[in-house]
View (tube, rainbow, N blue to C red):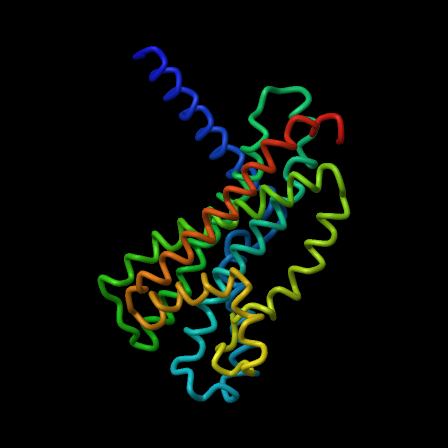
Length: 261
């Protein structure tokens, strides 16, 4: 029993180290030959924010501190978009490594999500500055963002595992997903409030799982409130479903990866 426990602990430690090493490698490759490097994780949401503020701030006068409202959605959208679009090709791009070394295949898409989490943490720097500028309140409620981020990371990983697995067999899956992602951006209430969406389209918006995460993040960071039980329950169920399906599909299709490179 003790030997089994030590063996499992060793495997977990080895896997964690592998994911961390791959994540650092991803970061270096992502910003290779870039003068600004990690600064892009700060500049990208700010550039989008400047555009949205210029276009929409006057259109949504009811949204107090609009830049803070929009940035809350932008930083989490950037995380989701970057994590899933890089996870898609993570296995295909590492086929040489997988054929020559004994590497846990699932570590590849996980490392892409971890890389995006690191970028997400950097994105909180301009968000924190904006909170100071707009004198936004920060209280005990803000701590709930960490649990919300964990759920979102698992949800995103589930999507990444799902599309990554199918993309190994059918390259069109990756091309289709990356083509539809920009459309999903406008289908998700990032720069606008759902209160402005016509009644006949409300249900359509709410069928988008990302909508519920954006509402969760804004409840905590923008409105400085603790989400109610319904919000938490809904998001936990969404996370469990997408992560569970993504993991099952990945493990099911993983056996045929090498023969389909």
